Each structure stands twice: as C-alpha cells, then as structure tokens.
Length: 103
Image (cartoon, rainbow, N blue to C red; front, side):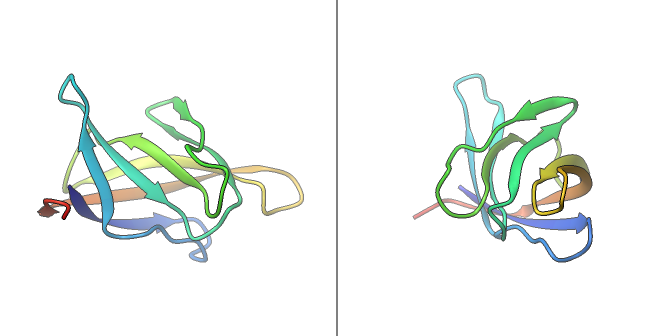
C-alpha cells in the first residue's frame, strides 16, 4: 500500500517522500517507510522507541510504526548535519483517505 504523509517541524529544510510505502505485519501492526530528503538522520524515535535506518545508501530511510491515522504523530529524528548531533521534534500525519494498493 501507499499513503500520503506530511511533515511539520524542524527548520523547514527537511522533507519526507510522499506517498510513503505502507505495510501490515503478521500481527496486523501498520508500518510506513519514511524516506527523508537528507542522508543526515541516524535514528528516529516514536513513542520513546528508537529506530535505526533500514538502509545506509542514499537518503535516510526508516521503517516506523503507524499507531494513528489522520492525526499528528510526534516523532524525533537525530540529525548529524550540524556540528554536533541534535534530536529534532517533528510531526508526521498519515492521511487514511489516501491509502492505495501499491501496483
């Protein structure tokens, strides 16, 4: 599946690809593949749980749980683009009305 995702927060320079890939695991938990516009994110946190990148090639890419649709989900992303790493607060919003079957 794919879903439209919007990003708020940070300096406004970073963005994420939309639509994002969406899948459900064997327990029915929903996951999204978040691809940043930058290779400089080394981890993300959702509900206090740390997630490391799933790829070391290209822009930073993460598999994150999607506990809510149509509401802001607060996430933290650690960027290494500054002189010292910084955790930055963002909000992701997954629009359930845009879910489509991936071709």
